[in-house]
Length: 207
Ligand code: 5GP
Image 1 (cartoon, rainbow, N blue to C red):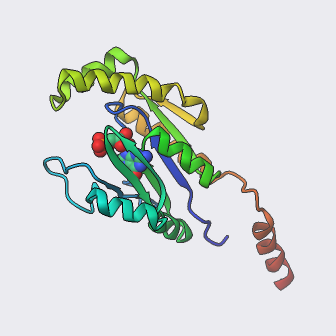
Image 2 (cartoon, rainbow, N blue to C red; image 1 turned 180 degrees about the vertical axis):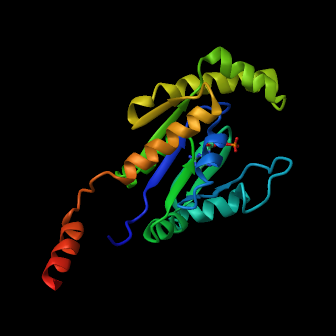
């Protein structure tokens, strides 16, 4: 069989649910590539431009919106975040799966633009556990934690738009489940089956 086109995977979930760890595990597979988003937020300590994000000014971000360069974009906690379109499309063409770590607003836009994208929602075991994880990070003020918890519930209310959900009780189990979803999706019979049939027909004619 010739190489398939890649598939687009959206990983969403409230901040503190461990999306980043799940994505990092998925990226250990060379068939999966991460889409680096553009953002107007300030880099955090240790973050590198072009690795975690492309860090840009509001002006540059708006220029990119106007040029139609985003597959989706959204405002998250007062900053713009967007997925560069060309990079995603070219990787899919090359047969790579592309992993997007984006919020729910972005996930819904992707689903509209590319209906065969697979949307995976990562849930915390409970809101109390999420609060513990956010407090444990030590990077957020109490007001910010309250805001993130309120935001978490708003995001969870949209879970019905997603294809799969994973409750992150345990990092390894959550990552293993995400890998299984990708494995199963790669074996899904596509809507356009003609190219598959044609390949075997051609082979049969050649014999
Ligand atoms: P952080 O600032 O903590 O890196 O990310 C904040 C939130 O923005 C996370 O939920 C993350 O998934 C989301 N995010 C990151 N990149 C994008 C993007 O390109 N588009 C959208 N819609 N959300 C993003």
